[in-house]
Image (cartoon, rainbow over all chains, first blue to last red; front, top):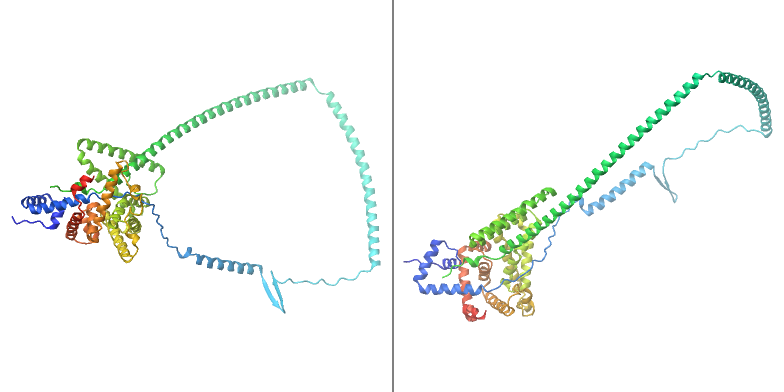
Amino acid sequence: MNYKPDEGTLISYLYGELSADEAAKVQVYLQANPQELKKWQALSNTKDVMGHVQDKEVIAPPIFMDDTKVVSFWNNNYFKTVMSIAASVLFLMVAGKLLGTEINYQQGELKISFGGKKVQTENPAQPVLTEDKVQEMIQSSLAKNNEVITAGWTEDQKRLSQSIRKNLDQNSRKIDELMKTASDASQEQVRGFVASLQNDNLKLMKDYFQLSAADQKKYTESLLVDFSEYLKEQRKQDLMILQTRVNSIEKNTDQFKQETEQILANIISTPMNKSNKNSY
Amino acid sequence: MAWSGKHGATSPRVAGRQKTRNFWCTLKLFKLIRHLYSTNPLNVAETLLDIAMMHSDSLIARAREGDKTAQSKLVQLWYKRIYNFGYKFFYDHDLAMEVAQKTFISMHKNIAGLQEVTRFKSWLYTIAVNYCREEARKRKTNRALSLNDLKPGEGEESYRWEESHQRRENPERQLRQSELSDLLQSCLMELSAEQREVVIMKEYEGLKFREIAETLGISENTVKSRMYYGLEGLKKILEQKKITKETIGYEL
């Protein structure tokens, strides 16, 4: 038999990474060659001894990742400053235009004015009045006024006296009529008055009972509303209790999940190669 | 996995329903595992590993789509492995931390470009190996800094005890194991960088020869050859230091 495994095959055999056929061939070869078997065993022993190097326990430190965000041209600080200055200047210019601002500098004098130039209109010259003329005008005006007042006063007095007289006549006539009507009042009219009074009372009583019934209805309704609100509140509290229970179940689930993940993480972070080794 | 759905904007009611469903799925999963364990305990480990890998794949897919939570979980999941790879490569805690952090920052930046989810492992180790080589080059140029060569434990008395993960065990045995681990680690450091990275990936990180070849960008035969000569070299170094399987058994 001329089969002789190379170093790669031997090392694969040592770590159990050969197919079943190849592994069988190597096994037969090693059985047939004690010298090679001894060499292979020495390697296996070295592997076993080196397996005593322990893993160091370490806790992963928090690693903070800073996502470098690309600042757009519009969000650039420089652009913002320039734009704000430009906006301020534009605002001032528009305001100046609207207010009609004018700035003049003439002969060492600075003038800042708002609005257009004011046009002054001159009054035409009045004819001159003398003191005597004014006196005369006042006196004539007073005399006229006195005449008008006196005439008005006498006229008013006349009218007043006439109206008083007329009123007195009318009143005496009315009183006479009233006295006549009162004496003519019949018994039937009195009865009608009493009947209308009774009707009014009946209506009043009816209204009262109606109002009372409405109040009672209202009270009963409010009682029912209160009761339904009480029931609602009770339901709300029950729901809150249920919510608390569900939250507690969720919390337990999360804890359970974390524990499971931890177990799985432990399984992953423990290399599984040691169980695969071929032994001889 | 049950909770591997896409992370989008969902209403609280839908989210609640999803949570309840996840809970029942997880419960069913555990019942299934218990049933499997009662029928065939040997298959349970494989089943769990499959589940874990599915979980990991869904995380990678989500992380690739930019899900920050998934990325953070991936860091938690792989940090220990990458740190230990760096530690075994340099035998130096600070350098291992440096490499692990740089690896995960790079992962965050470039995961969107990962073509296949199944290649994540080799992709991650490629990043780690590249950073290890970069650090090794820097270290070579700054050789004058003797502090870098200080072995952990020499400068810090309590170092090993703080990192011990089996404190409940017999302290004396724990100390001996830790010392042996350091001794074997120093033997590993005597290998060339090329052999060392292959030995670490195979022996301690459990990568297949195909995955190592993918990670290092070399042929599978070269990987096997480096592994073979790496083990041969270690055998000689162990012989020189008189460390054998028997002496270790006696010591422990």
